[in-house]
Image 1: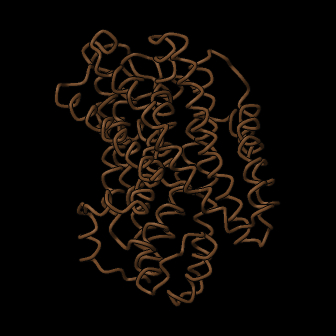
Image 2: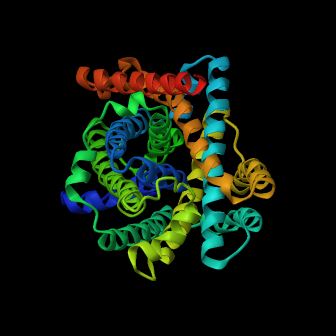
Length: 422
């Protein structure tokens, strides 16, 4: 896929923008996966609109960090995993690889559970059977891997449109309070003082700023056939940033819509303990008074799970090849990762029933948030190093903002772990 998409030589801004448009869609998928659904619904049902600020802040973090990731890939020709192997000692490199693999498995776990729940809601397939069916997505990827990269981007974009249409429709019927939504976008000190709210907030951050997305983005921007001169790279960074920021804004809207729907439907009607996706699906039709509400919810969930599967596979391949310089067939990689996620999913669904699946979803997102620091720090370090980046090094202002984001993520994770221990 390397440099497989040509960039037009024409001076038309729109044609060039269209040529660069696509990787942002694959990145945005990671910001609306089933793990996001669990944390957003739990946050909206328990705390109304208060955690909208966390979604907004996380999305701002995401836009900045994804900009750094794409800039690293375009400026140096190395993705984040390759840069770690090139500039860190073997011990540090292997530790970062191991932690990244844990994050990918945690992400895949959310995809397994989310897809299995969607299959159960749409076709009444038992959860344990649904978990096993999710291994079949390997066949889909086998069909796609020999096709053009553009086809993959179009498929992902169509499924994002399904998710977007579903939640716009449901928000229309929910009629949430606009003033409360705007108030929820402002910070509140209760997030730090309330351990339960903080735990959900950390889960939202882990579900929003996905660590494996940083590795993925730094690699797939290299699918564009840009020139090796400074002007071409500068132009590529500009258009890739537009692509990324626009698609992440769509992801912000979808994430916010899920929380707003939970707050405007469950919280206001006294269903404060709603966390389970199946419970949410069951209550949507009677509370909204629309027969199609539950169906749209389940359809969007299935599209979300399958989208995340595609990008998760690509990220896993990039991570393994980048850190270890080990090339392995995508379907083998997909099967290994999916089996590692299926084992705990099967155990929980079989022995504890569906009620524990939401706990697993939220916990998987907290794991992602904790691992995020180990991806963000190398990314900020590399893009702030003039020896590595040359003229594309971060400006002083961007360096300051990036390190503040990294330290804030570390601090929030440490505070969350401390409050959970207490």
